[in-house]
Length: 207
Image 1 (cartoon, rainbow, N blue to C red):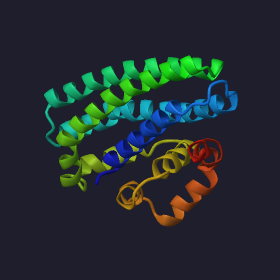
Image 2 (spheres, rainbow, N blue to C red; image 1 turned 60 degrees about the vertical axis):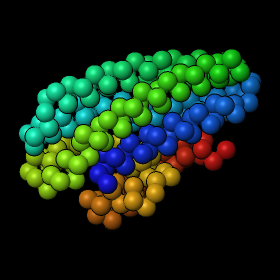
Image 3 (cartoon, rainbow, N blue to C red; image 1 turned 180 degrees about the horizontal axis):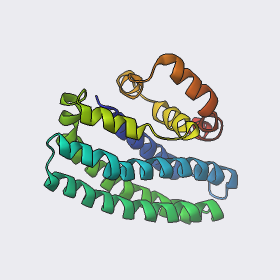
């Protein structure tokens, strides 16, 4: 499994979590609405960063190792569809955060269902086209350079990413996410910079 597919698994996991939480949302509970808003902000950031970085970093590298421009254009069009659904979900989650009403929870659930539909459809297509390339060309100079570009983030952003991606991951997913990171380095990143996620977001899914 590539790290890309493991990230997709984290997105799928959070979408399921949101749908479950919104279906069970206790009307009028502003504390729960605020918790979900915190989790949503993190999810929104992670998914937006993922598809924007694919366009800017991954697609040029993949084209160099043989992925056609036609395939990449199709994936970019799906990104646009996903971004539209993400915007609608962002608006709906913002309304729920402000009101904590049953009606807004239902609207947010509907928007999240659409976001899940288009995102999973895109991921399934992307994984069919790209996952074999990631695995077969993993050690090439082009994909190594791509990995270095993806790693150019702040320690806080990196720590939050790893804490999020590993939250609920299977052993296979965890291995895909961490296998290129020395264990002592990962321990420091998670310990120092994954703290915000562990304190503010992870508890949302324990309720």
